[in-house]
Length: 114
Length: 115
Image (cartoon, rainbow over all chains, first blue to last red; front, side, top):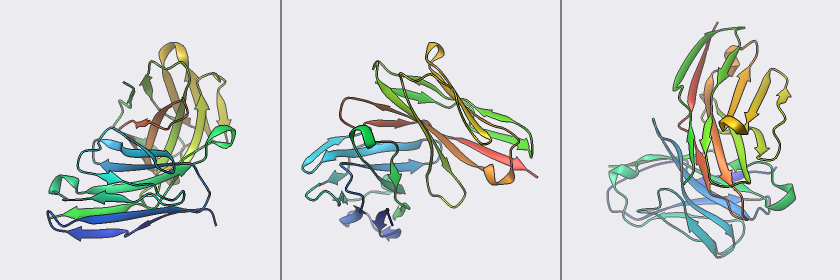
């Protein structure tokens, strides 16, 4: 089954404790993105990646890091989480070129930073 | 910079009424893509439609229809004969072209369909 998976789905942590949210897709997609969703703000793009080792900042990259060492994985790293990073996070992937039609989203990761 | 405005934050309609969700966008690109996504109360994001900037034909899919007007930079979404299952948050999004994927979402419109 074609899908985007994220882990963990729920996480409560404390300020300053490094964490990684994993994202994996099994569709051989070139493009992957991370978004955060906050009430009243919609979804905002954090980082996106066009292919292995190619990443770029979205609208709200501060406090986040990403890496794309393999095509299927695009982890989101919070080196020193802060309470303002409490949010719902979505990973997405899509193909490029003529086959591109939509982004496939993961189920979301709800993060609480105390 | 690109921007997507969904001016209606919340809409309530009675079942079987028609409802239109507005989306206005700003971009300097001549080639771009517009999307609508649905987020039901369960939280997942469901793709509804993608439209490129060169295709201004209106689209109909069952009870859903979309009206794309480049002259007014709008991409409005109409649900005909609304149903309770249509209750969700609907997002409009804009993606610029050029071989990369910078995507800007609107803040969403929460639609409540009352039985």
